[in-house]
Image (cartoon, rainbow, N blue to C red; front, top):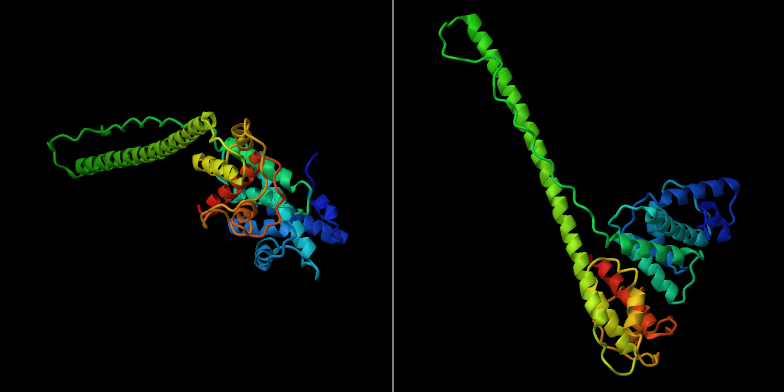
Length: 340
């Protein structure tokens, strides 16, 4: 199915508006993908998009998204949910279509948060929000692991000639006209040399920038190749024998998280975990408390980790060890992103 248009999103969510207001809010939604937002603001908008009340997120939404839009109606809770979900969808769909590798950790975090809340049983205001988030993460998982070719540095410009227009020899005939002519010739020669030096310095600066970009590209390529090599060894190694429960799921999620060097995680993360558990015994889905570091995960977006900490959560028990590990892996990645 094709994604909903801005106007369709308002109608889909049963927000009743006049024709003029509908057009105005449609412009607000369309414009929203061009507005900047911090990771914390986007996580707040994820909460609003799933119908979770968040006063701070509502204030942030009004401050950024509504400052140039029409006046919201008195009972605007549903409208705020629509606007928050619409901006997220605009980010995932429009920015995700780019073929250029870009660093978008705040959008990555929002997409992971959408997946976490959807998995926990919350219902988003739009049916396509989870699909858009998944598509964004798949695209980013590939793009961030593509190796960028580094542009070679250009050659230095040829050094400017130091010859003067007129040779200045010993002053055989000292006269005013000759001295003035010699002075002017010398000034022109010095000016040309200054221009040549300035041009050379500009080219050197450009080369330094290209070398820095090349070094960065090589470092990124090293991270990608090291990640792939280590994940391959992990995948081919034997998993500890024994019953498959939450401890096993957590251990494999923690291992994959530790091997993930480039954020967000690889597109094939779930398939990798499925292969790790391919020869396992039947999944024991009964939750069992596990010792987990307090700094793992993000408050409000870690239902799986909360479950293993013995806290109340709305999440449904996964149907397999791989699904459980994948959910834990998502929450671990989100925690890392929020600490960048």
